[in-house]
Amino acid sequence: MSLLLVPLCISLIIALLIAINSYLLFFRAARRDAAPTPPAALVARGVAYSVAGVALAMVLYPFGPWFRRRCRPCPFPRRAAPQVGNHDGSPCAGRAPVAAPCPKLPPVLLIHGLYHNVTAWTLYRRWLMQAGFTRVYCHGYSSWHTEFGLLVDELDETVRDLLAAYPDERPLLMGHSLGGLLIRGWLADSANQQLVAGAVTLGTPHQGSTLARLGAGRLARSLAFRGALIRELEATEAPSDVPCVALYSPIDNMVVPQEGLHVTTPGWTLRASPAVSHIWMLWDRNTARLAIESLRELAARNAARERDCAAEDRREHGSEACPNRAAHTPEAAGHSEKVQQARNGDGTECAADRKASGYSRA
Image (cartoon, rainbow, N blue to C red):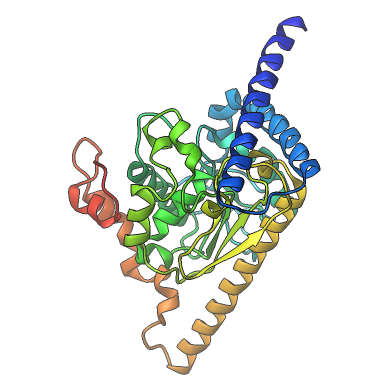
């Protein structure tokens, strides 16, 4: 028992230092920008949330590889099973053949933030499944020795796997912190916007954070407030043709100043979440309810759009499908094959594909 208490105590000390220092910088930025500061009691609660959240993340982190194997999408279409039954919510699409019709709610892909892994979504996966999102998957990546453009390409591969598993549906994307920025980077390509039903981000530094200069690693430092990466993203991304929601906390202690949480891309909706710390957004039930409500709204809007497209197709007596159904056209379905064919023998993508993503890997 005493051996278990040692890493727990170390985790709590590290979490406390991170919480106190980040909130000191939070207040400093607010005074410098003459921005209103929240009540001291609220910030004290934020410190407690931060300590608990960081400690919990550190405790769960070692289980990341096992968790990732269970919740990653399998790039195989579902097969009909001889038994009649409902989808059992198995984390791998290729392992769960069903005979019943697909649920109304689309699949969901979750993307974690910087320095974290897929264990970030331990509670969200449970809450989403309880809310009827029975097909919940996670995308994991390393925060070390990599760059933003490379991570966007990795996310693209995972999304393609999910689309292959459910070829007749548009999935929903949700990302926390850097995960949300990766979603935005992926949606910068207007062709990708036709493949998904929408996206929700939690505490994402849409304009960067001044704390990024204190981060470890090149990836973290590239997220500077209105730095080169953010400017390049804003210059190359297309307005969002699919509905997207950015949730932010008024006492987020990792995105400083608060303006960094605000997304300016047309097509995005900004919503305030309950006042919790940056990492506690992953463990807070009230924040999850707001995120799930947003996902439900996006799913409903996508279903309405599909119905409108179907009605338009019927009126036109089988003429060319409307643009909103681009995700199901042969051209869109063949995009994944084109990407695979464009890869070199060593598995790397060619320069043309890197250029198409809208980001420089230099």
